[in-house]
Length: 623
Image (cartoon, rainbow, N blue to C red; front, side, top):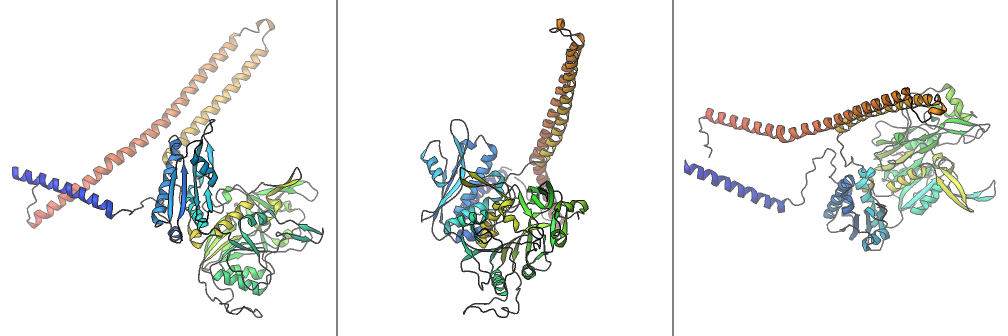
């Protein structure tokens, strides 16, 4: 018996040494290995991110300014800050030495704080003493170029990977991207023949010129200029076949296109309608997008008040203001924007079998209908649409993102009469996926829909009151990057709330608010009674409370104490519900799950012994 026990303890010791050895070996052999078991793969980098890291030609420096000590008192920011730091460390580890990561906790009035301000990282005020909380990222390259994320907004945590990838991409490609622009609307400025004065470009065009190198696409162009990162087409009507062929070739080669369409609606009563032509609509169809220029979307719930025929205010269901509920919060182009105004927008929908993916970005409410453009053009007062409004109960897509390899709109080759430059390669099929962002409205770019023009001491000042300019710049920002950058999609939020706890809290708070309203109602009623009693008092008894007043006050005090007691009971019930839920989770994690595994192990051992008895083999004696 002693020998068996000695042998058993020796076996246990040998197994312990073996486990320790395996752990030590695995720390070296499995270094860098990860297994992401989160529901939405929060810690798995996108394939586009890996390709961006591999394309870094020379080392860049990333400076993560994070006030770690100050974050100790802010649990949510501390958790998100640790997540950002771990993400940046993972990027640096995968960059093969091309990213030098510096993690800095700047102290107040220190050199590090000055460095953060110099690189464009801003601090949020913490207290009246001037202390600031830093939570941003800056990067520099070998040519003294720098990019910055001033502050990591926790509400945009799903775009963390995209924002950091964009910063790295801008450092690797520091020059302004080339944006080629075509517009049939007078948005690029020029000479106004009616006023005989120079016309200022629209604000969005001026803003785009600050961030991009803008080139103009001539109406009869036979090719898209070289190095074009984004092709912008604003109301592309009347384009000749040669230009449409050049645009289609650019799409087949995997181009990046942002286009703004226009239904056939007249800008002013009596003027001829001018909208996107049928020929460009057929080009859109080859890209998988259906657009009917003879229809315009009217939305009764989103209608804005405009000046009517006689100057009186009037609701116009064609001029609509989209809110957050009508914008995709999962796309970097529209997430976080407040409101976007549209004027006579057309509806978009995907074409089945086109082979492209269609993702809505903007849409109407269900209180909308598609109105014939012919009916709108002869109407002097658009509010008349409300008198016979018939909502269809469906949401109309007003802007969308389209990606994928597209079909050739000119399968027979270049159109008749089109002469191509020598050595031009004509694509018959798509070589790369097209990235297209299409808006069903071109007038949304006009200043009057989103800008107030002010005069400040003789200096013109533009004040935006809608996010039209932001959505356009976001689209250009997204499309001006590489295909790898565009492929990085938003992830689920890092913070995972306890939904059952929140549901319990909402129920309890609803009861709490109901009791609070009841208390306030009784308080007002009692005050009215007291005021009435006081008005009946005589001058001699001004400072003396009558028995009725005393009774009312005593009644109020008793009622107030009773209601406060019930409020405390509701709050106590909330705490008990949450504690009970926590206890259930602890029992499941600490007792139930280990017990279940232990039971399975015992059942497995019993089954193995039974099998051994059946085969006649003696069970191995346990030490």
